[in-house]
Image 1 (cartoon, rainbow, N blue to C red):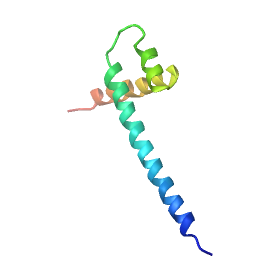
Image 2 (tube, one colour; image 1 turned 60 degrees about the vertical axis):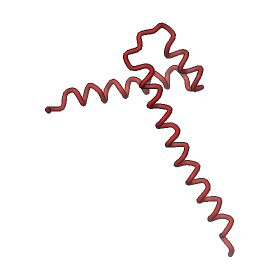
Image 3 (spheres, one colour; image 1 turned 90 degrees about the vertical axis):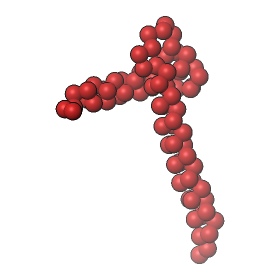
Image 4 (cartoon, rainbow, N blue to C red; image 1 turned 135 degrees about the vertical axis):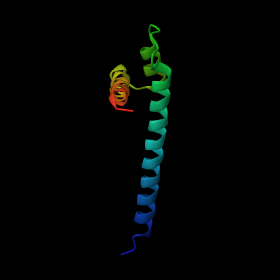
Length: 77
């Protein structure tokens, strides 16, 4: 059984998944950088339109960011 094509396709798939995860992390970082402390009306909606993520996804990202910030602030220095 020749699995050369299968192995190549699986490798391409794993590379694409890794690139997608990297791009998602970069985009998430940019969302957080833009929205952290931003009280501008409609900012979340604008980010949701540009990213094509739902407003709920944006809220979840910011909630996780806020929780991580709070946890870091509570750590003894």
